[in-house]
Length: 90
Image (tube, rainbow, N blue to C red; front, side, top):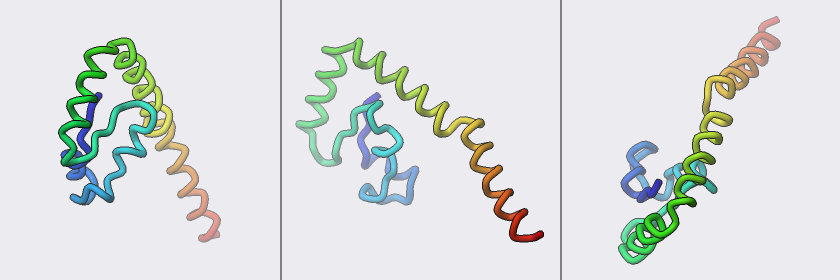
């Protein structure tokens, strides 16, 4: 996938500098800096010239999302929160 961090900043708090998209996609995608059309064009050329890399990045992104943001990861995080809460209230 190809993302313009400025376009995706609306998922955070509306400011490109505070977007967490680069961290989420780290190693799995191409991040294009806002207001850099040359970088955008170069990245699109790369996408079309290296379809195997696109497939590889897609698989990496899927595995990373499942591992870090899937229900199993959410469950582990929630269990830790409830365990801390339970310990404080005993």
